[in-house]
Image (cartoon, rainbow, N blue to C red; front, side, top):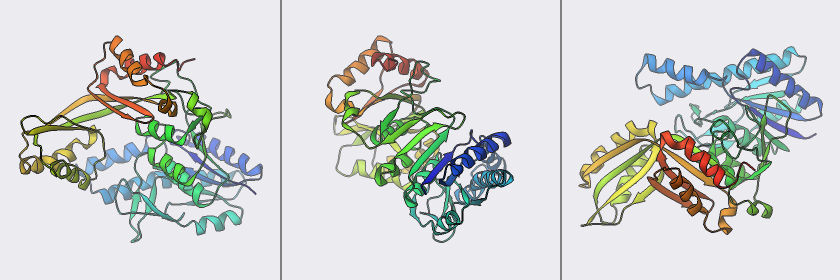
Amino acid sequence: MSLIVQKYGGTSVGNPERIKNVARRVIETQDQGHGVVVVVSAMSGVTDSLIKLAREVSPTPEEREMDVLLATGEQTTIALTAMAINAMGKKAISLTGAQAGIVTDGVHTRAKISDLTPKQLKQYLAEGYICIVAGFQGQTKDQRITTLGRGGSDLTAIAIAAAVKADLCQIFTDVDGVYTCDPRVVPTAKKLDEISFDEMLEMASSGSKVMQSRSVEFAKKFGVVFEVRSSFNHNPGTIVKEETKSMETVVVRGVSIEKNQAKVTVRAVPDHPGVAARVFTAVAAANIIIDMIVQNVSHDGTTDISFTLNRDELPKIEAALGLVVKEIAAKALEIQDGIGKLSIIGVGMRSHSGVAAKMFEALSQAGINIVMISTSEIKTAVIIEESKLAQGANVVHEAFGLSK
């Protein structure tokens, strides 16, 4: 008997009728002769409501208690989904992340999976149960509830698929698959039949909301081929897999945008060994994830260090670097928001020249100014005004013929 892991996102389980629809799809899969593990997110809007509720009782809620609170969203969904399947005459059982064997480190609100021992999960599967697992959560070795960050249910599904050696992992969402760009931003965007792990990882880390980047990293590391598809129809989705030679013929696979960005600049930093390390050690100690880093050429013995991060992290960055700026005798800490990131991605960029120049030319002709530039083997990303992200995405998408 083959084993399939299916993950359903918040919109797929957004109300009782949709939960029953998921139950029918899961039963259909089992009736085809497969063992089934289902990973579910909280119902759409529930996590945001819980965050709002927390802030109504405390302006700065403790992260430990936030994890205890937010984990209840997925636990509601697993119980309801199991009830729906049982009501339809099949055997289902709900399991929290801890019961499914997910062990995490101790970083609250953004924990990493450190171990997964699905002993109880395998036992229920052997007894013919459909196992409904709460995504987004786990438990530390000292039994503290933790959550895996936004999109953590994807990571749960991929990790479980790897641990139980599933034959197939399906990520069900509210879109038909992975597109060349967000169709709500670029109406002419096309669905991709396949995409490499590396391309998917770059798209996820560059703002594409289809998959959480850590889940793609995990899939690449453990070789978990997965399919992104819609829970509202039976259309084939997008297969995410190891890179193949044919993939290099496509120069640019897709365009991603990321809003809600901010740029932080430490002005007039003394140009001495160890100063940059002092800045970024403080950032790392505050568990702040940063993206692009640019250091200007030294002038008069000082230099400027700039980096980008999510705008929501600004209160943390000010607290983390306030004293450091004084300690290293830098001139000032400057913050600029109202910016966003626009990226082009494709494994074919490795073997084709002039890709970045074509992107810059398209933006120039549209009158869009570039604030920062970052490149890798398969990605070129620029920081531009957030208000011009949609326009930029459309002109770049058109420049590379992705609508065809």
